Image (cartoon, rainbow, N blue to C red; front, top):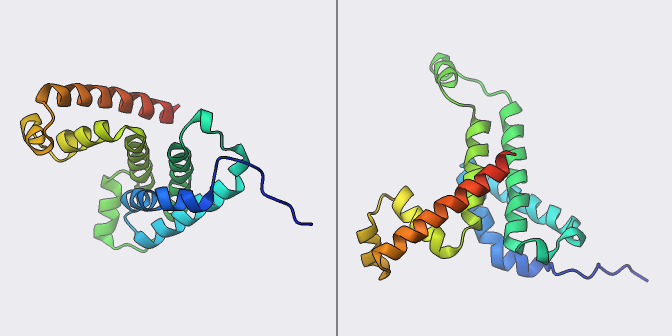
Length: 171
Protein backbone atom coordinates (compact mmCIF):
# COMPACT_ATOMS: atom_id res chain seq x y z
CA UNK A 1 0.00 0.00 0.00
CA UNK A 2 1.26 3.44 -0.89
CA UNK A 3 1.41 6.36 1.45
CA UNK A 4 -1.19 9.01 0.90
CA UNK A 5 -0.38 12.68 1.14
CA UNK A 6 -1.29 14.39 4.41
CA UNK A 7 -4.60 16.19 4.38
CA UNK A 8 -3.84 19.90 4.07
CA UNK A 9 -5.41 22.94 2.55
CA UNK A 10 -2.61 23.11 -0.02
CA UNK A 11 -3.23 21.77 -3.52
CA UNK A 12 -0.23 22.10 -5.83
CA UNK A 13 -2.20 22.25 -9.10
CA UNK A 14 -4.55 24.91 -7.77
CA UNK A 15 -1.63 26.89 -6.31
CA UNK A 16 0.19 26.77 -9.65
CA UNK A 17 -2.91 27.93 -11.53
CA UNK A 18 -3.70 30.69 -9.04
CA UNK A 19 -0.22 32.01 -8.26
CA UNK A 20 2.31 30.67 -10.77
CA UNK A 21 2.30 33.67 -13.10
CA UNK A 22 2.43 36.18 -10.23
CA UNK A 23 5.39 34.35 -8.71
CA UNK A 24 7.15 34.28 -12.08
CA UNK A 25 6.59 38.02 -12.50
CA UNK A 26 7.96 38.59 -9.01
CA UNK A 27 11.07 36.51 -9.68
CA UNK A 28 11.72 38.13 -13.07
CA UNK A 29 11.31 41.55 -11.46
CA UNK A 30 13.79 40.70 -8.74
CA UNK A 31 16.42 38.90 -10.80
CA UNK A 32 16.08 40.48 -14.24
CA UNK A 33 16.65 37.05 -15.83
CA UNK A 34 13.67 35.00 -17.01
CA UNK A 35 15.55 31.69 -17.03
CA UNK A 36 16.74 32.15 -13.46
CA UNK A 37 13.25 33.31 -12.49
CA UNK A 38 11.67 30.18 -13.94
CA UNK A 39 14.13 28.07 -11.96
CA UNK A 40 13.19 30.00 -8.81
CA UNK A 41 9.46 29.46 -9.36
CA UNK A 42 10.05 25.76 -9.89
CA UNK A 43 12.10 25.63 -6.68
CA UNK A 44 9.38 27.61 -4.86
CA UNK A 45 6.73 25.05 -5.75
CA UNK A 46 9.07 22.18 -4.91
CA UNK A 47 9.72 23.65 -1.45
CA UNK A 48 6.01 24.34 -0.99
CA UNK A 49 5.19 20.73 -1.89
CA UNK A 50 7.76 19.41 0.54
CA UNK A 51 6.46 21.71 3.30
CA UNK A 52 2.76 21.28 2.51
CA UNK A 53 2.08 19.69 5.88
CA UNK A 54 3.32 22.88 7.57
CA UNK A 55 0.97 25.17 5.61
CA UNK A 56 -1.75 26.51 7.89
CA UNK A 57 -4.56 28.55 6.37
CA UNK A 58 -5.28 30.27 9.68
CA UNK A 59 -1.74 31.77 9.73
CA UNK A 60 -1.96 33.46 6.33
CA UNK A 61 -3.13 33.11 2.79
CA UNK A 62 -1.64 30.60 0.41
CA UNK A 63 -0.38 33.50 -1.72
CA UNK A 64 1.46 35.05 1.23
CA UNK A 65 3.00 31.69 2.12
CA UNK A 66 4.16 31.08 -1.46
CA UNK A 67 5.61 34.59 -1.79
CA UNK A 68 7.53 34.11 1.46
CA UNK A 69 9.02 30.91 0.06
CA UNK A 70 9.72 32.63 -3.28
CA UNK A 71 11.49 35.51 -1.55
CA UNK A 72 13.84 33.05 0.15
CA UNK A 73 14.47 31.22 -3.13
CA UNK A 74 15.16 34.48 -5.01
CA UNK A 75 17.55 35.70 -2.31
CA UNK A 76 19.32 32.33 -2.37
CA UNK A 77 19.64 32.58 -6.16
CA UNK A 78 21.02 36.12 -5.93
CA UNK A 79 23.56 35.03 -3.32
CA UNK A 80 24.64 32.10 -5.49
CA UNK A 81 24.97 34.39 -8.50
CA UNK A 82 27.01 36.88 -6.46
CA UNK A 83 29.50 34.14 -5.52
CA UNK A 84 30.23 33.28 -9.15
CA UNK A 85 33.24 35.14 -10.54
CA UNK A 86 32.43 37.40 -13.47
CA UNK A 87 35.20 38.59 -15.81
CA UNK A 88 35.20 42.39 -16.07
CA UNK A 89 37.31 45.02 -17.78
CA UNK A 90 38.58 48.26 -16.17
CA UNK A 91 35.27 50.06 -16.72
CA UNK A 92 33.47 47.15 -15.11
CA UNK A 93 35.72 47.36 -12.06
CA UNK A 94 34.99 51.07 -11.64
CA UNK A 95 31.27 50.37 -11.99
CA UNK A 96 31.44 47.60 -9.36
CA UNK A 97 33.27 49.87 -6.95
CA UNK A 98 30.64 52.61 -7.34
CA UNK A 99 27.46 50.59 -6.85
CA UNK A 100 25.68 48.53 -4.27
CA UNK A 101 26.20 44.81 -4.71
CA UNK A 102 23.77 43.00 -6.98
CA UNK A 103 22.81 40.77 -4.06
CA UNK A 104 21.80 43.77 -1.94
CA UNK A 105 19.77 45.25 -4.80
CA UNK A 106 18.01 41.95 -5.45
CA UNK A 107 17.29 41.44 -1.76
CA UNK A 108 15.89 44.99 -1.39
CA UNK A 109 13.77 44.57 -4.50
CA UNK A 110 12.58 41.14 -3.37
CA UNK A 111 11.52 42.56 -0.01
CA UNK A 112 9.57 45.41 -1.62
CA UNK A 113 7.88 43.25 -4.24
CA UNK A 114 6.93 40.64 -1.63
CA UNK A 115 5.45 43.36 0.57
CA UNK A 116 3.52 44.80 -2.39
CA UNK A 117 2.14 41.34 -3.15
CA UNK A 118 0.71 41.14 0.37
CA UNK A 119 -1.30 44.36 0.03
CA UNK A 120 -4.92 44.30 -1.03
CA UNK A 121 -5.50 44.89 -4.74
CA UNK A 122 -6.93 48.37 -4.06
CA UNK A 123 -3.99 49.44 -1.91
CA UNK A 124 -1.44 47.98 -4.33
CA UNK A 125 -3.13 49.70 -7.30
CA UNK A 126 -3.02 53.19 -5.77
CA UNK A 127 0.50 52.78 -4.40
CA UNK A 128 1.92 51.60 -7.72
CA UNK A 129 0.06 54.24 -9.73
CA UNK A 130 0.92 57.20 -7.51
CA UNK A 131 4.34 56.30 -6.12
CA UNK A 132 5.85 54.26 -8.95
CA UNK A 133 4.09 55.42 -12.13
CA UNK A 134 3.93 59.04 -10.98
CA UNK A 135 0.22 59.58 -11.58
CA UNK A 136 -1.53 62.29 -9.65
CA UNK A 137 -4.50 61.38 -7.51
CA UNK A 138 -6.74 63.27 -9.96
CA UNK A 139 -5.39 61.26 -12.92
CA UNK A 140 -5.89 58.00 -11.05
CA UNK A 141 -9.39 59.07 -10.00
CA UNK A 142 -10.26 59.74 -13.64
CA UNK A 143 -8.90 56.33 -14.64
CA UNK A 144 -10.62 54.35 -11.88
CA UNK A 145 -13.75 56.41 -11.04
CA UNK A 146 -12.70 56.37 -7.38
CA UNK A 147 -12.82 59.72 -5.52
CA UNK A 148 -9.51 61.46 -4.84
CA UNK A 149 -10.12 61.43 -1.08
CA UNK A 150 -10.59 57.66 -1.14
CA UNK A 151 -7.40 57.22 -3.16
CA UNK A 152 -5.44 59.38 -0.69
CA UNK A 153 -6.75 57.28 2.20
CA UNK A 154 -5.88 54.05 0.41
CA UNK A 155 -2.37 55.32 -0.30
CA UNK A 156 -1.89 56.33 3.32
CA UNK A 157 -2.96 52.88 4.56
CA UNK A 158 -0.91 51.14 1.85
CA UNK A 159 2.23 53.01 2.90
CA UNK A 160 1.61 52.14 6.56
CA UNK A 161 1.17 48.49 5.63
CA UNK A 162 4.33 48.54 3.49
CA UNK A 163 6.34 50.04 6.36
CA UNK A 164 5.08 47.32 8.68
CA UNK A 165 5.77 44.55 6.16
CA UNK A 166 9.24 45.80 5.27
CA UNK A 167 10.00 46.28 8.96
CA UNK A 168 9.06 42.62 9.59
CA UNK A 169 11.41 41.51 6.80
CA UNK A 170 14.38 43.37 8.24
CA UNK A 171 14.06 41.79 11.71
